[in-house]
Image (tube, rainbow, N blue to C red; front, side, top):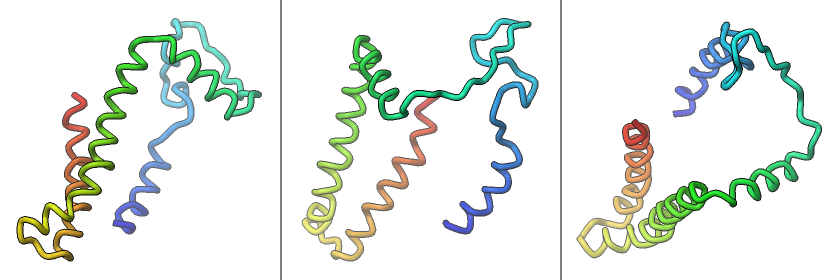
Length: 118
């Protein structure tokens, strides 16, 4: 897995760009002929993230997303992660094999997420 990850690094470095103008595109929301200069942020990143969170918390969409991610994370980590191995043992699966079920379950969930996005 590490070798595959390291093999992708040169490809990503070759294909990824920092700005839309690097590939001949306008920034998202910009009008043709209007090139907004990229200015680095002078704000503290921690403060900026809390300001963004306070702004987002005013909208219903944020709370719907928050609730759905909370339920998904709680059920995956809190319930399945805690009870998967004992449930496997109850069904006659040996301990070592049961411990191997958890990463397989996580990999199957992770690989299915891109399929659900579209």
